Image (cartoon, rainbow, N blue to C red; front, top):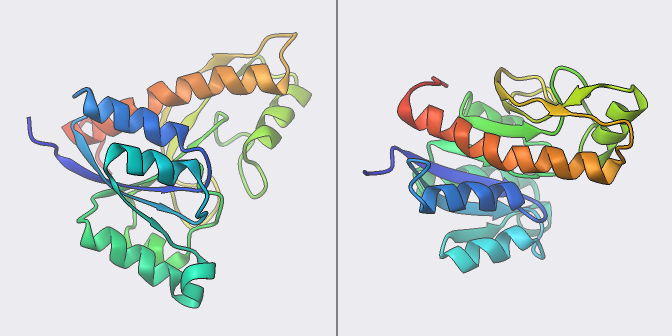
Length: 198
């Protein structure tokens, strides 16, 4: 079956969610083609993963392109005919120009059940610390559309994960991440098949 979506990735560090999506595409579980990876960090493991998979990859940041970084990102995604942009641990706020150009076509995964525990500064372990401090019984990942406000866009999918009394940030983080690696590819496949319309 021919892939119905061309995927472009933005990642800053490890890119484990990106790898989970690439693996799902390679197995034929997700009907999409990973076309290009952009990182704002020249040393990111995400770039190494892309090279290992034979996927075009670029370091684009204000360090490499100054004020033209947003234009370079847009041009790169357009050159690779990207349909949907996947944020996979991209630790920089996307410029308004990029969001406008790909409006409604940029996805992110957040490690909590939005709208709870979202917003500026709420990422990674800060999210899990807040969940534990609030004595929540459940947490879990959320896939949402990116707009100009942090963690604000339309929610596409969520998956509940239990929070245990003896959980630490590390144990909760690991349990949520495991489900992120399932939910993100599942959601992209639903977009590819038309079950979710962006």
